[in-house]
Image (cartoon, rainbow, N blue to C red; front, side, top):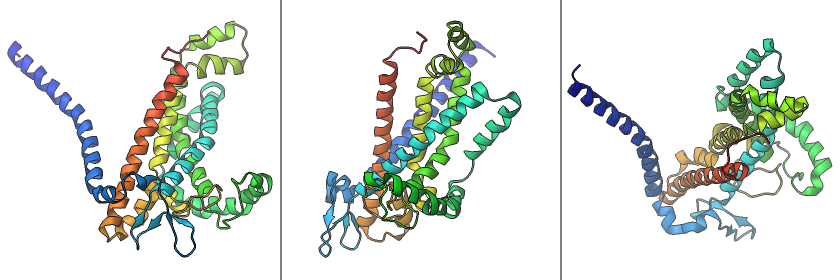
Length: 321
């Protein structure tokens, strides 16, 4: 091939790769444009109050948030439900995922490592509707009959576990199912990050007389902390956008309760439940604006994650003191 033909091929390949990269930005821009344009009607009617304002029921004089009949809409209970269920899922999943990753990487016998790793990764491939069905028939009855009464008896005084929902559905059920769903993601990525830590780091800590636990904490986890934070962020992203499993167990009521045993709703679940039934333009626009709110929450979470990474690392590379 002549030099001219080679230069032309290199230039064509370069611009093809640039086009592939720009496609990502184009997709994000198109999604944002569609959400903003389709939610314009709700934006013009409610403004920013859509995310925090409530309305008063003229009969019960109780706060209400979602009234399609009178065209009163507020995304506050759905934002609340999404954040509560997602962070509850992280609270339950992160310790288990870290413990599983540490066991598989540092303590597991060699003959058991591959089967356990395969089963962990297999959990990530199960469709969310299967998790939802399992939660409805197994998890919810288990919570209703055994776990919730124990929580009410021991921690009911806190107000986070009050006896106001006998069905077993609610924030706790959605948080548990989310924890199970994001556990394999966080665990698998954490295991890969820990495996990438040079073995010399372990030897250096052991040479200083550290115990096995100290070696794992100082020589492995500390050096892998940035990757672990990234794994947790990816798990949170999965939890924020999860739809079907959460819809089946959260209760789907547009209400805000302090108790984790109460019914609620998430941004993804309300869209899934009502989008096909919305015949009014304002109702449809409000649902699309909730999609925009989910988009905004995702951006905020990633921004907070970057601040968290900076707070942990202080801009310095991981090292062993």
